[in-house]
Amino acid sequence: MQIIRIFTTINTNIVAGFLLAICLLASQTATANTIKVKQEIVELKSWPGGTLRLHVNRPEALAANLPIVLVIPGAKRNAEDYSQYWLPLARRLPLVTVTIECDLKQCPSEYHYNLGGYKLQDGSTPDESQQFFSVPELAFTAIKQHYQLSASGFYLFGHSAGGTFAHLYNLVRPQAPVIDVVAANPAFFMLPDPTITYPFGLKNSGFTESQIGNWLRKSTLVMLGDQDLEPRTKALSNSPFAQQQGLAVFSRGLKFFARSTDWNLAQKQQPGWQLVIAHGVGHDAEAMAPYAFAHWFLPPKKQK
Image 1 (cartoon, one colour):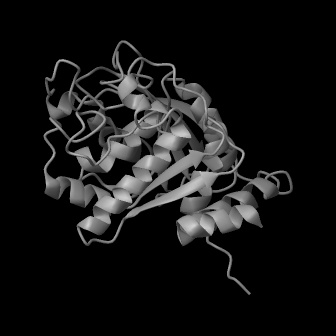
Image 2 (cartoon, one colour):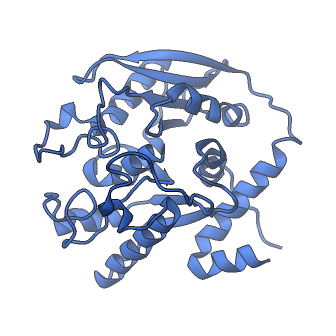
């Protein structure tokens, strides 16, 4: 099968992730949804940047040890839609999905949202507590308390603008209790290149070589739709600097994965990042969510 051969040349982990997702997608119509799910809004009031709405899917029958998935939407900030994308998956496996809504008043620009508020357009660096990057930990704590859950860490999924946020999360919040990160179709990337100016590279970013090394060792999945071939529409995401990474998200992701792999090899350290390519999928968060779900929660089938 040609697709599998292509994946094999990239990374053997890609094959497993792809097959898991295909098995999930193929079985969705054959398996009845058996878990009753409640959809609720929980207000997060502990962030200094303002009160945020958390869109929650959770089983009617709560158990303390439920996994928690935090979701960062794309540039439209359409958290309600993203919560709906994860609803069929929450019906298949008992877990809690929490989609974080940060509107244009609270996260007014790509610097505040995609880049988590780490460093703004004028070069200023807000206090860590004011950054959007601080919100996942606050949301995780709030949801644990609200539903009396015992999870020691959370899974993080971000798509498009949220994918850019997700791919940087382990760099900016290295001590966060995050189990694994999926950065799906990121609008653009920060390349591990000291000659390229932030946010597209490390120059003037303030990150040290040690921090970059730790970041690229951590478990993170870059997930790309091979039909994500259209230019982005936002000013920063479609700037000439972003276009130097590639004319489309798919090519940008391939470039980042290659550059991050080379960085690790040059430092003689084992790459911690993986790549999954969703065949036939474009810039589509709903289509990408099952791939992340399969990667995290469906065990690989044993080969005969």
